[in-house]
Length: 105
Image (tube, rainbow, N blue to C red; front, side):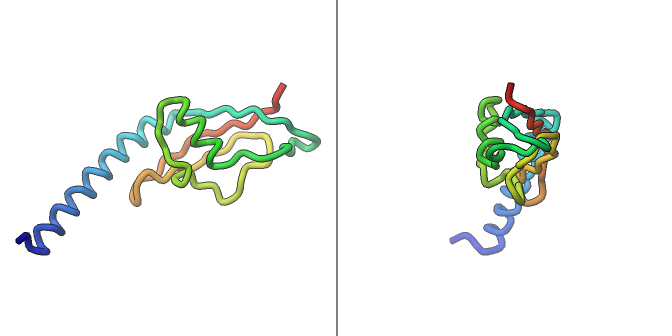
């Protein structure tokens, strides 16, 4: 029967591997820029908003399989502009993805 000590050691090793994988993914995500076109009214205020799901969907198009729950948005984006959106890949690893919301033509 395995001891608690050996299971703790394997959990730490697994966590270290997951953190290293997350670091590699973060290096790939950092240079990514997502452009989203939305209808906007006066003062660049959007008709609707850009949500974590929208960002995760755009990452999926670029072959990054990121759960929308890992995209950290306090509130949906409601204006045109550039935003650095954090993506929490691991408890110790967060990457920022550049999101550009522009006016739909």
